Amino acid sequence: MSFVLVSCFAQVSDFLFSSKYPVPEWIRARGYMSAWFDWCEENEDLLKREFLRRIEEKEPLNPFFGSWYELFEKQLLGYYLGYKFVCWLEDEFSLERIAKLKREKIESKILEFLR
Image (tube, rainbow, N blue to C red; front, side):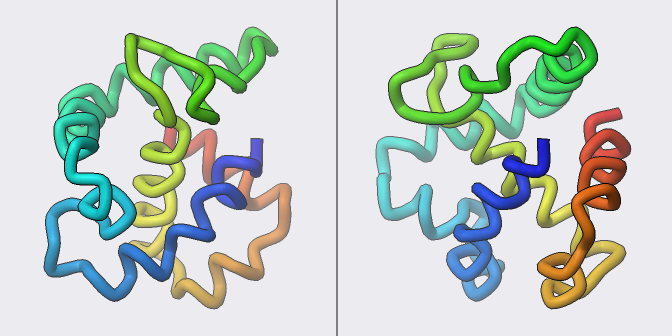
């Protein structure tokens, strides 16, 4: 489950220094993905519910990650959730503190974020 944070944390530099843009740099660089990002924004609650459901039912999270999977006819949805999760964590912690969080804390925060 902490894979969400780990896989997203690599994107931090992209959105940390481009906060003036409504869409993170890693999405803006792929112009065609702006519609994907907009869809994710509009369906964030659905994505959170589905991710949480899969955790609770011990179903694979793979469909959220990788360009070879599709969920809700979209790809890479886990990276969107990871991006939003790190943004959410920044309300409470500095990026340095986020990077140093223990696995147990990350997992409890992910569950809190998803609920």
